[in-house]
Length: 142
Image (cartoon, rainbow, N blue to C red; front, side, top):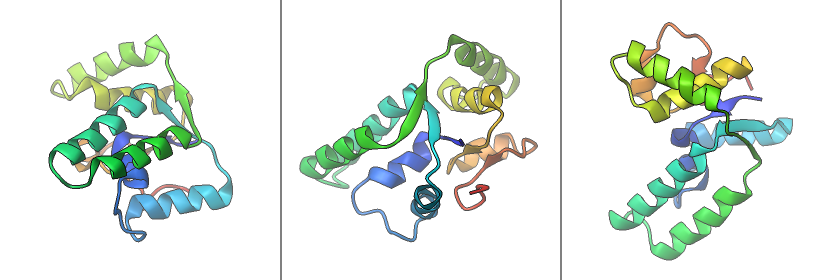
């Protein structure tokens, strides 16, 4: 059960994302394999915020964002809310030049559950390039 971050999930639900986008192809592979995915509770807030940002920036309409939000809430994602992840994320953020804590929560969850973290966040992957279980959607083991 891979951990996915908001940079991947937003491409699953945002209006107008191409079917050839790496995250969409990854989602298709997950669906065909009937695999469950995981993310921290923060995932829903981050993706919801990205949808609202898209409306503010006029990337899509409010109605389209509303439909995407409904889709987000229907995704088969097992959400984790464990204070140990926040504690570990703090340690990681401090170790890696105070990288944003919300990114490190995904890393901490994947580390704790001994699984892959799938992210489209290039900055995070570059920062943790030595961690081989942090991969892009096109590199996921699925």
